[in-house]
Length: 433
Image (cartoon, rainbow, N blue to C red; front, top):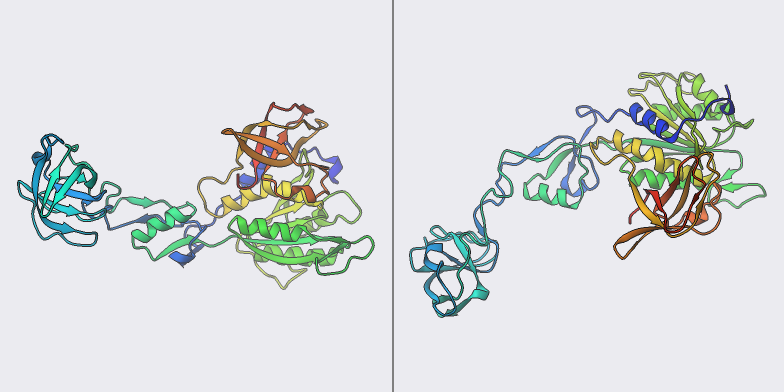
């Protein structure tokens, strides 16, 4: 059955099918041990606890004086309380004395609070004369004291599995003295482009040829998602070459992304080859613009591909995305569907679904209303409110140029032909705001 005979799925139905097909990496089998300095953007595979309390001990939040609240609770500028300074306590120093009535210790931020003291008076509210300090204002009881275990109690959960490790999480792991940790391996994503007309960027162009931008864009997007790209190059529109490439890809990758060859032309062989290799095709077309031709298929676990390679067994069920060939359509379908699939596969437990915002459009947005339409542009923060500015020029699926520097896709639902300036529009976030 060819694609134009198949009813198009809605975008939401296609998304639901894809995400239901994705099985996250296994928490036992798909684990790597990495050093803390190489853990950035990795997904934590096992929960982390610490044997340390945070703070490790009662310490001062400010430079000042460690005192007994009972001694200074009535201090004022008119009637200051005078205390004897018996010790100076910098950070990293273990106090040697116990604060008795009428005594104080000079203390600095982060330093251990000495026994007997229960409150910090900041230095701005004091005056010092030799070994005496004048307390010029009454503090609150236990003011500027960071109590032991008030941030975290030893033995309780510190970081949960399934989170992405960024700077803050890595800092927490460092202070918890976790120099090595278990993370999920990076998903492997095979990428290739199809078409006799394609050439690499370093080749001179002959009449009718097109530079393959899709593989480079997809490789960058896969890296940004935290996965590992496996680049297979340009595959000619020859069934045998395509079959070998697909068989190799599904044997060596968790996800396979091809661009081109999934429409209804005479040289669009991908779907037939997938079926010949035992694939189950779940999606053939989606009611979106750009991106209508979209093939999504799975292969059975322990599938063997004898036609291309000598019975290589796949120890997993590969997920195949056959994206359109036009470069804008490739990017839009990746952002809308593939990115979420990679994130879910990676083991992250939250934050893998697309991020949509409702914002004001600064421009007129049009569509024919027949398919859910995606128009690219940029979100700007104006007076505390995000506004969508449509990229200038043609929004053809073949126009890659005006996609540069964009960070959002405006979404016009089926039946909506016009969004006027100042009207609200739903946008899909595709980059940093």
